[in-house]
Length: 471
Ligand code: NAD
Image (cartoon, rainbow, N blue to C red; front, side, top):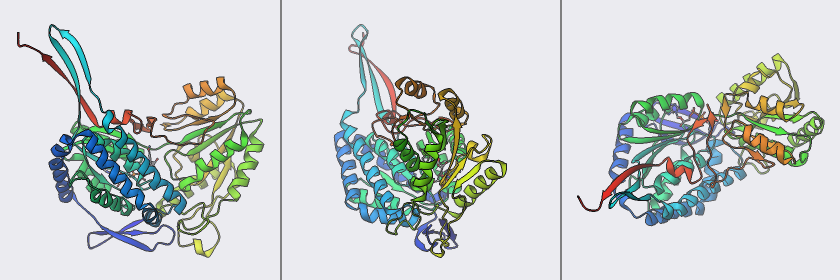
């Protein structure tokens, strides 16, 4: 949570208590121009640095972050609200992604095309883009930065990151650690301020070659429009409403466990999260009973408290949106199976807590079905078979992730081919691998992060024709 004070600073607050946990500058257009200037100055030297050396410096940065993992995780919990255990997982994921790309530095390649003509060959040269701006939301402030930082730096770009207003502290500390570990001045900078002011100044600066944005679909569209004016490269990782399908031959215990983690991890504030559950009529009673039992065991509390499994929502606005989505849905139909409100207990009153919530058979046009639900509420519907499940799953403007649980290889293959989403997990929890490209279909995004594919989004290729003698 963040509030502005009149000194040009933003106060960062603990979502579990409202207590102040830090203050950061509220930078404006002049600061944006200065940071971009430093990044542009640093670019030629970083580009000329041998790729192996770039990889080694980036890896040293990742190791420095890992060495401070516990301190960073505590900081992340304080500003974001997530349980300490999940904060540690997040910092570790950041490190793994940066190391993954550091390891690919020596594999950067172009192409050689022989015999284009007599004594003439062609080259496909791949070169960095220049200055990259990374805009990051508050739900996973560090991993979503890492997805951009790793490939951008390894390819030879310099990067200016703008974290969300309410979660800048861990990101600032990571930048400091990576600089101390050897990143040259200007190669990676973090600048803090409002999206509508600082974010726009960064996106529209003519010296910026690419904008890597993660956030909501409406803001992503706006950022893409601004970037288009300068024909800048853009990648967009936006909202989602991932369906999970459980068929009648599924391993129900494993599926229920994945649905519970997939919905309630990070208090439901994840782009890739199980947001709609479609269950075959023959197993729906069993799935519902087992999910209710799991949900009953989720312990709510401050992220820093021992034993907390579900922290607070990140902000008052997040909770208000969720409350509106749930109450509007229940007014139209559906049965409340669990949760549906704020928890009792005075120690939770100061934070933005919300009970883990299950809603059975809400109308397919209700808000929990058609909007992105960014909190701990899961709608469940019965389906008669895979065909109906896929049809329901695809009836969304989003197309980020999806999953299917079945022992039938034919059904799994059909689902993997037909689900309109950038990722489909078959009998697997929603784990994102650095090795595989990730990016949404439809209004969930544009371009890919992760995988070797991410490198394509931080390089430009150009063709060179070489005639060995002028005649
Ligand atoms: P948001 O779109 O409000 O903000 C994201 C970032 O954009 C913040 O840093 C914000 O300051 C900045 N911003 C806001 N207005 C801007 C403007 N006019 N110009 C430039 N920058 C601007 O999103 P949020 O509420 O912080 O994050 C939650 C959303 O992010 C959800 O929709 C979620 O699904 C999505 N998300 C997507 C992914 C993915 O990989 N697809 C991952 C995590 C979160």
